[in-house]
Image (cartoon, rainbow, N blue to C red; front, side, top):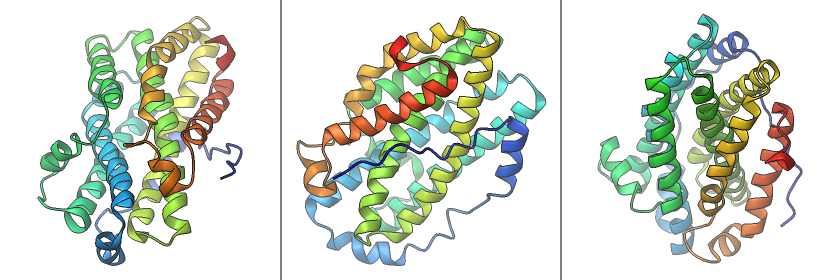
Length: 282
């Protein structure tokens, strides 16, 4: 399957502009129509359900973590405008978690308690995924909470959160899952909600790329913080892009693991060029 050139729809603007865009982009996870999804889910093949449940579990765990491990960045804001926008991002993440929980409730399975969904989802994620979200993110957030004025701690956290988790992993997962579902006219409610989440995420990523670009322009030595953070994380990122079983992506999505990795690498390369830290310098 040919892979298109990366054309990220980054909303690369200052925090005040991004805040205004947030005000104009409100949506509710409870108004998405899941009627067709409820009818289609039982009819999916076992391999389809396995891959989609793996993706949904990863999203569920990711949203729980990034909702609860984000307040440190709000506390480390530089301007009032930045604080205002960052507060909206935490609201967005909570809304995303609510949508995935509702999809679990109404389409996949009970119970209707978010914590139970997260616990069940953890049974499907990989060790490398846990390393990123349960170790690296938790530690980076703890460091930022302890030292909110530490520029290196903030740059490291934004690199992990916005450049790796939301960009490299998040955008890659979105592209291939929604391409497949849309092409096969499957789970339109999930695609609708996930697309709204994706729109939010591009706004978040736009902040992260803007922040890193501006910070490195003012403090060129922080480019080394970005490089070291990526060196520490990329092995786990590569492993996290693997599907739950050998051949699952190729047989269900009609793509290879190389396709997934190349798309993720192209996106990361593009964003690093914007920031001013070319991937060749890692």
